Length: 372
Image (tube, rainbow, N blue to C red):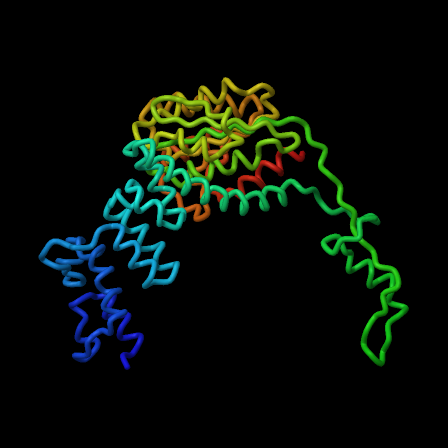
């Protein structure tokens, strides 16, 4: 029987790793896995030069549909998602998301959502309808996760006064133990609780605030575009919050009318193109009704194709009038930014909060300021 660890090394290295098995052949299932990996990674010139995966010299008889069926049968879910992500992002095999036969089989995941957004301009109406299924399912998953975080951020705070709502999450352990210590039983080491106590929760008194999300839709910001759409949808309709969502490249598009439908919103986003951040900031500033009750969130990598001096001036003016300005180099679950640090520093010097956040952290930031 082949050692599983050695077999994994053989699959990782391809034919060049045959020595790992000491001359043994792969069994039928492992050989099928090897063929599926060769179909994808065998086209990588860098790996081929290093002798990791040489691939075959003839035409592959596998179609994308065949390959997808094979990896679905042969690999665990996490590996399937990684292979699909490499196919669409690393090797730009667009028919993974533009072939109707593939789309009918494929299991939606975040990597495929990004691929759909990047390639939807290549799709005919029939394919676009099938691709929409990927957008809908992944967005629903993101909404379910983020909605919980948003509700938590806006749910109110505990106060130390008796509450009538006897819920486990409101249980006041310290006060309950203190009040019932007279019923301590030494022989069992337990306190008999006669009267439990609970916190009450007070809702923050919310005045109307504006949250204006300005989202850079250049190709490198696709993760942030997705999470901005979902975040805006979760904030939409919250008491005390009026949400705007504006996408920009060299043009500015106000998508606020679609904020309650993030799927429709994402299908309208056009990724790529240049960037005029100052123009978007000026548009956002024009939306502000009450400066001291406005949060302007600029989500961009800050590589400005427009006038950086104008951008800094607009941010400084917004801060001077009492608005909160938040510059985010990334808004996604990883919050790993890649951005123009020099311009970001200039915005920070002008009074903006600058950094990277997860959507949940942004919701907490908004809740903290809205609740004041």
